Image (tube, rainbow, N blue to C red; front, side, top):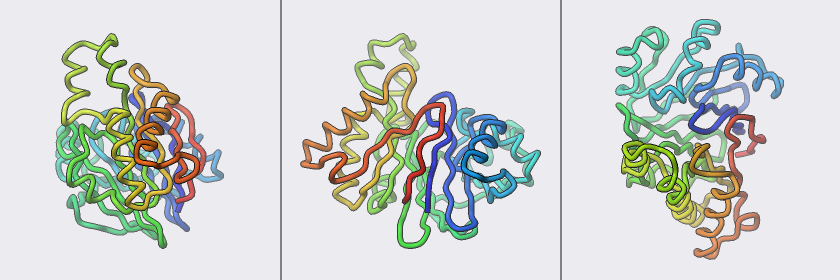
Length: 261
């Protein structure tokens, strides 16, 4: 199983997971043209896509889906709450949406999918664990905090795509209005570098050997700051990035490297 992020951040989110002949997008918050271009760089065509998994209904996660559905008739998998939000907005044709029950596993081609509830200010936000062969991938972003449900679901995955959204001091001292700062820092907002680093330490002790930091804020974080903060938190637990695990950062607006799960 492999994963490559096409975009990761407040301006758009999209990743491709594949195993054998199954190709799944996790979110599609960038244009169809960009998605098609990224696929071509991997030697793939959009018609090879099996489906889109949606974490939640915010525009930076779904903006490219209507055109993908229109041109390629892709099935779109969402939680019940997200489906209702999409129905209400008329964003995606009802007949293209397949609703899954959060916490119950289902198969798409060669991949086994499970979803788990995530604490975010949406109708029913979820993360995913994906099994292909003997390894498990966890995708956990848009987290106000690491809830019991998140920890239970993600623990034990070998590869984790983990939110490291903001530096707390940058956010507090930055230009965002107070209400937005409060939202981001809240229990249904986004995970800070410090919180991501603390969770990463527990994940490595639980068996993770590859972690990609994702969904970095353009205004309140930098790739170096996220990487260094998480590295420092790992070191306090005796875990060395580059030795005990492979730690990387997903780029905001370009493709990441291919991560072998």
